[in-house]
Length: 162
Image (tube, rainbow, N blue to C red; front, top):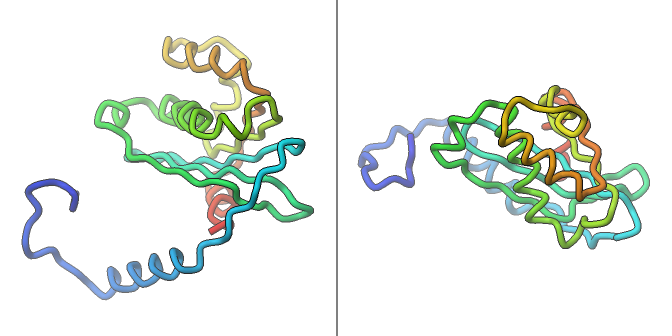
């Protein structure tokens, strides 16, 4: 149910599970990690997650064995974007987040982790989709390596910062 739309019912069902989830969200916001200052001479790491309705990503850098978060971002997809294929939504997440963090990462080495297995081939071969070809061409200006990270592991790594 979209609670941000104009016509929202007055009697929204609220269960104990909703209370627990809301409490967990409040704790996560209060306990959010400190953001670190970037070090331009070190490689950057990006973890992204894409769903049918939105995209999210975290920029970080390694300090020893630890990944230190520098910036987070998320965005709801438009209806048009929601109708895109999975690979197009995943590729969009890369382009969208690179645009947001370009001031930090341009000219630096970037490891971009995604849970979508075909996406690493975006920079290696010709796509049938004009949109993907355009984005693959735009990626050439970055020193980026797209790596596959299985879904659960990728989400765990992304959310381990939180």
